[in-house]
Image 1 (tube, rainbow, N blue to C red):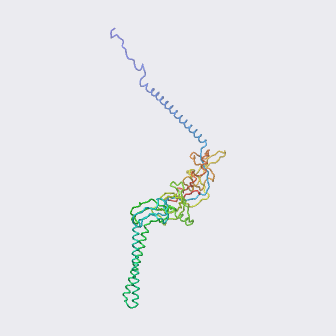
Image 2 (image 1 turned 180 degrees about the horizontal axis):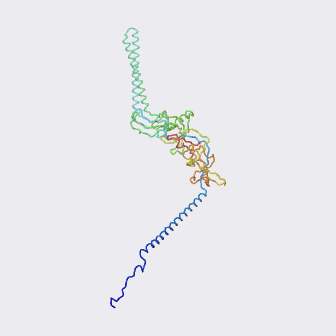
Length: 444
């Protein structure tokens, strides 16, 4: 077939086989957007449903916890005598302290004491070699005897010349010369007596004696050393029975202390250990210094302790409790029971509601003094009422509680250590000032 007669094949028109591209794209986009929105909506709905379920579960748990009784530990409010006192940091000091020095020079002989022993006043504790001083004493005595002999001869001469003068044999000038010679020898004898006394004193000083009753310390010089008079420290003796404690109080507290000291004459003072827990000794206030330290605004006071058992030791730091007054019927609660809120201090007490359930109640209190484990109240629950000391953070008014019997029994004593006194201090807002605070301790 000739090429000219062959049929002509023509491409089909796009409009006839498939829709145009510009008509297809908007539909696809819409479908994709719809799918995405549906997926996001389903995910958001699932998240919201899970969150709501968790909130509902938490609410159910909270409601269950609120309905469940809260375990607490309680102690009763006590009413008992309590002394109020001031506290201060004190330093134990020997009542008397002597640094022993030799008053003469020489070789130190073997000592006559054991380090740490008790010595009495006048007891010989050391000796300086007395031989040189014994020789000086013997020499002074010899000079005295010599001059006494000369005086005796001069007195005899004067008696003879006096008889001759009365007989008119010798002149007045000769008699006066003999009388003057007699007076010269009398003066020499007086000087010789003083020399003998001085030599005897130097010899006595070779024996070193304890000037006070007390405990002797460690030896500072060994025997055999040459001692220089009034220079070398030999040993220190401290009087420990009685013993003194010095402490300071702010000047604004001084007038009431001095007033009570003038009125009562005796003010009890207790010494506690460094932790202010264990009582060490009982004493009394002796006096206050006669001037206030202008650099610190405090005055130094001195207390004296018998210290029969030597529980206090020099340079020991102690906490001083200076008793100011006694409260015969003070309400006492543990410090752990005191809570603070917008309305002030309060405690949780335990009582019964109308249904007979044991519930918690909020009771406002006015704290007078507080320190350490216990506090004293001016107002609050009645004596014998049970106050919560543990578990108060979960309480609300009217909440049901269960009381721990073991803790309640342990807390009836009021203290962990029965030998320890109850301690109190003035609130931080008090005007006492300084490092000292008004406190109270249970009478024992």
